[in-house]
Length: 77
Image 1 (tube, rainbow, N blue to C red):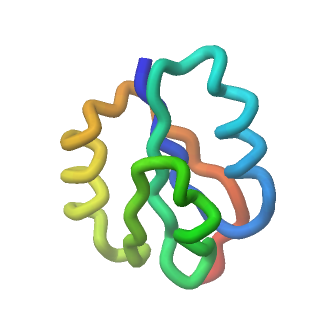
Image 2: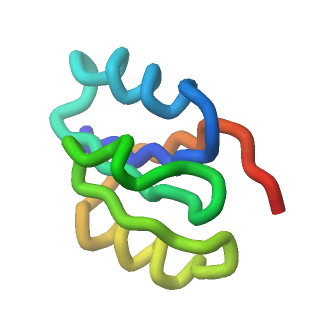
């Protein structure tokens, strides 16, 4: 199983990634621009996208063959 965390601000996205290492074979991160810092996820395959870049986000998910998605953290518009 392959997980992608769509990360907003706060510690919740990082906590999910830590706790799910046992259950998932692979994890990557979509970092929401102006909400989370990409450098906080340097140990994962990660890219930063703005909220309106849905197409690029979907391409990222397909590229990494993601099977499960979790949205975590606060998001400001």
